[in-house]
Length: 271
Image 1 (cartoon, rainbow, N blue to C red):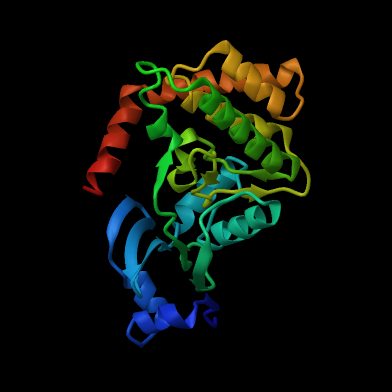
Image 2: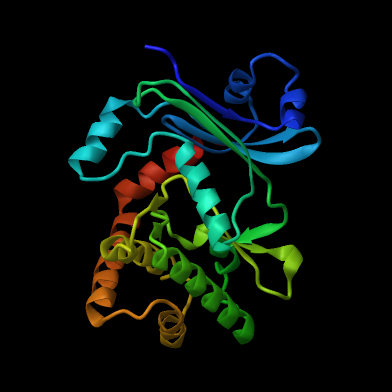
């Protein structure tokens, strides 16, 4: 069977790689690791004097595909999912990591090799880091209000257009420090995004539950959560009850010894 190949790389990036096979060069490129898990790596690289983030996918294997299918989940096979997600968010006017290059090679779905190269956003801070000290030091009320409204507006825009992030945690919202005092947020890490033909109730519950879970320990008030609800899509009590139930389960799982051990092992691999 002939190997299928997709490649979209600007000439400037090709030249900075020094010739040869561009796909191989990008798949073999080394840099500062930010994530290194089975079948996938995210690194920061310098090319032609500029900083980029490169996600390299080395194949998920049949085991992962069957596991997803048995759970009635769509398997994520490589980088092109993120490419499509970036293009969709650009159309919706949601700021994210600018797409620079991408490629995919292979015909066997379990062993596809692929990559996506995005521009470094520069001086940004994740909301997880930004809000970490809010329990001790109360943030400016107006600033917090604008942040909550913008997060709700992004969630609303995604979900009204059938887009689900599926890793919708506050760590994937990043504040553009160069735009302050204005509040400009980027939504990043789109490799698991699903795009539906119409809004999905269950997928929206999962996204909002993940967002709620990840904000539980930053000192938000009841008024803060009500403000989010007002600026998100109008939902009935059933929706919010399902969000609450799922978020509490996520919180319990995250704080379990088993999950924390796994997290510590993953972090040790990129030190």
